[in-house]
Image 1: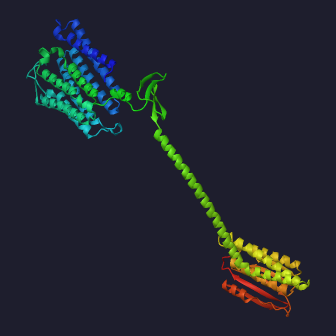
Image 2 (image 1 turned 90 degrees about the horizontal axis):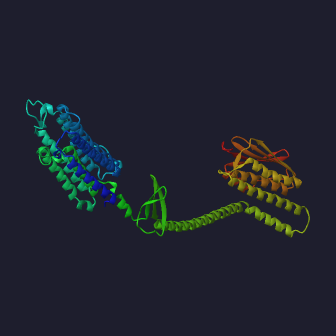
Image 3 (image 1 turned 180 degrees about the vertical axis):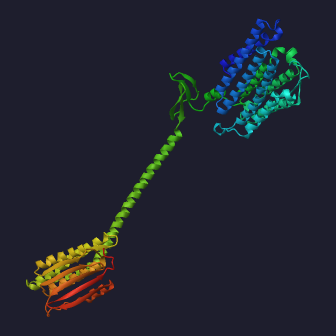
Amino acid sequence: MISKKEYALYIIIIAGIVFFTVWGSRNLLEAPYSTISVARAILKDLFFLFLFTGWGAYTRYRCANRALKNIMTVICVLSVLWLLLSIVKNRMFMDEDIGRYLWYLYYISLLYIPVMCLWIAFVIGERETSFKISVKFIWPLAVSTILFALVLTNELHNLVFVFPENIAIWNNNYTYGVVYYIIAAWIYGCSFISLGMMIAKCRRYESKKLLAIPIFIGILLFLYTVAYVLGFMTDGTLSCFEPIAIYQNLIMLALFESLMRCGMIPVCSHYKDFFMNASIKMKIVDDNGTIFYETSKGEIDDAYVVENKLNHGYAIYETDIAELNQLRSELYEKNQKLKEYNEKLSNEQAVRSELAVVSYRNQLYSEIEGLIAEKIDNVYDLINEISEDKGTGEKRESLFKRITLIMIYIKRKCNLLFLSKGDEQGLIFIKDLELSIAESIYHLRRMGIECGCNVTGNTGMLSLSHTMLCLDLYQEIAEICNEMSISEFAVNLVAQKDAFELIIIVSCDGNHEIRISDNLKEVAANNDTFISEHEIDGGRIIKLSINTGGDQR
């Protein structure tokens, strides 16, 4: 759709073309080289020069694709160059040789504009970022360059223009050589091929309906060229449409304009119509807020206003975010479900952790119960025996001492078990064994038994089974001493690099027989240890030897 301003501009341009074609033609002038004649010719040339230049600037403004914009700019430059060469040849130089070579230079535009048409056809439909100069762009350029070189060297071979022999000066009395017809075929071949490619690539049905307009202009261009070749523009009734640099350029630019108006060459002339028929609410305003364009779409119920900065203005549009809000609502519901699920998982994990703790405690209690069950039964038996014995004699006192020893033993044995659980390898420091024996010795001293504990050598660690064996052996000796009223014994802990020894020295006479239980000896044998007993003067030595094999730390 053409706006009122564009329509008025086209009327002015057409009127100017008609005026300068009639008013500036040579046929209407009685004195071709008079001052008025020259002024009319110059005004005519300037009009068309400004017309071609303005069309090129306007076309460059309308092209959005950068590659297409550059190609159209080159076409405009070639058209203006052709017109300038014609003005220089016809108005400034009278020398025939210079005029002939200026005439040859016309073919810069004649040969390279069709190549630019092919380039336009190649570019249409391609993304701007994917445009690259390749072989399909280079070979037409090479062919036109070769043909132009033949035109410039025509004086050597006369294959383009054939002049009579022994001609004194150059004039219009010439014929055409075989290369000229090759050039004509190349020019029109490129033009028709490019037009066919544009039609094939066009995706707008409306553009194909208007195809008759560029085809008509193309036929008019062909007929004008044929009429010029046959000489009708020079001496015939059509001399008002001379020079060819103006009118062939004019018809050619009209052809490009029709292709752009029909949509064969994509430009932004129709962007206003696209904008007005947009499916969303939009408007374009300047920096002061004045509205230039605004779509006719109604308000959107659930919309978000977006504002983008333009040159000297803003593009403001509304985007429908109903789907986005719905998606956000669905995501919120899913997040709530995930939160509930995570809470359930967290509670389940807490329950599992608590169950694991309870299970571990039960396992530990079971292990403790297995270690001290026999001693607990002994304590119950001793308590019952005390309850049945109403006297206050030495037997009652001995029972209380024995209960005290057993309870200390139970306490320390459980403590050593807990300590072993805190070590990755289940080892116990010898210092902890020393503290367990020292606590028992402390209470034995208060019971009237002279005893002591001594540690020799470097400190280290023992396994749980060896530590328990040492404590069991000490406990058994302590209970025997308490039961037999032995008043003195000593405990030595000897720690060496590869061995550990528990030595207990008991002061007793021949009336006291100290014997280690067979059960304890069997446990010692199963743990690769050895219990030995030696009689000494005034007592007995019991030794527990443990081979640590260098693993003692």
